[in-house]
Length: 363
Image (cartoon, rainbow, N blue to C red; front, side, top):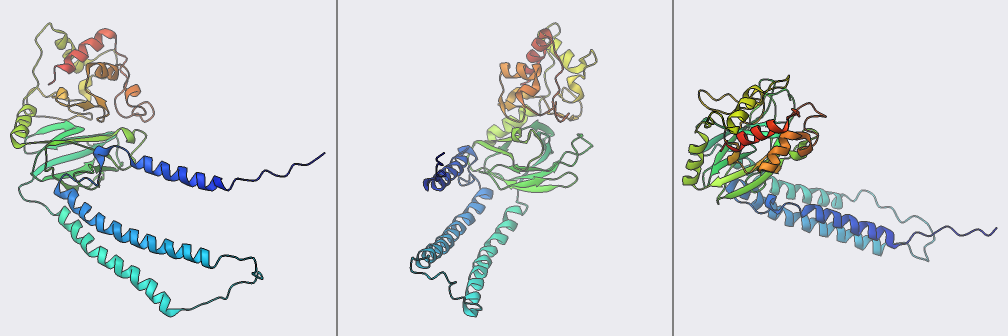
C-alpha cells in the first residue's frame, strides 16, 4: 500500500494567524467611542492625557529601535549554506555595553517618573469650591448621595459644568447590603482616571466636565457574575439646569389619588403580600420625613433617569414591565445565581399593570 507523505503546513498559516490576532485587537479597541480616554472633557482627564502622549512617543521610539536591532541581527547573523555548524564566537562581559543599556532605560524611567508623580498629587489634591458626592458601589449598581442637598439617586448622577466634584467612595458593607468584601472600580474615561471602591475604606476621586453633556463609564474591576452590567452615567448641566435638577430631586414623591391604578400600585409597592417581600423592603420612595435608603436604588424620581437596572436598559414602559415580570431575563446572573439583586416576585398581570402605572408616576 502506497504511503502518502505527511501534509505540509502552509508557510502562510502563522502569518494569517498573526494578522487575524492583530485585527481582533484593533476591533476590540474600537468599542464605545463615548468612553474614549484619549478625548478628555475636563481637567482631571486632561492631565493624564497630556502625560500619556509624550510617553507614548518615547515608548514607540524605543520599540522601533529595539525591533530594528532584532531585524538587523536576524538578517546579518542568519545561518548560511557555507556554515560549518559550529557555534558562533561567544562574547561575555562587555562592560561598556551593559552600562549603556542599563543607564539609558533608567534615565528614561526617571524622566517619566517626575511628571507622573507630580500629576498624581495634582489630580488627587482637594480642589476649591467643590461639590461633594458620596458614591457607594453595590453588586451591581452605583448609588450616589449628595450630602449638601440630601439627594439619593442611582446609576445616573448630575454635576454642574465647570465646577470640580469630589467623589467620596466606598463599597457596600453589611450596614447597607449583604455583599460585603467586593471591590469595585469607578471609571468615567472622559472625566477622570480609575479609582477603586473598597469596603470599609473611603477613597477619593476628582472629576469635572467643561461642557454639558452625557458622559459614560463603567465598573472597571471584576466584582461578580453581573459585573459587565454595572454602568455609570454622568449628566453635566449648566448651573441653572443643575439647580433645577436639585429642586426636582428634593421634592417628595406625589401620593396618587385614591381609586386610581397608580394608588393600587403604591399599595402593592408598600405591602406586597402572599409571602412575597414588599418592594419597599429594599427600595425607598420618599414622601415625607427623613430619607432612609434601602438595599436597592432609591426610586423617588425614577422617571427622571434615562436608564435603569445598572444603566443597561432604556427607561420605557415596556422595559419596566418586563423587568418586573422577570428581572433575571433583563439583567442575567444578577439574582438566581448569586442571590443578590432584584428577585422575581411572580406578579400577576393585574399587579404588573398597577406597579408599572405607579412607577411611571415617579417623575
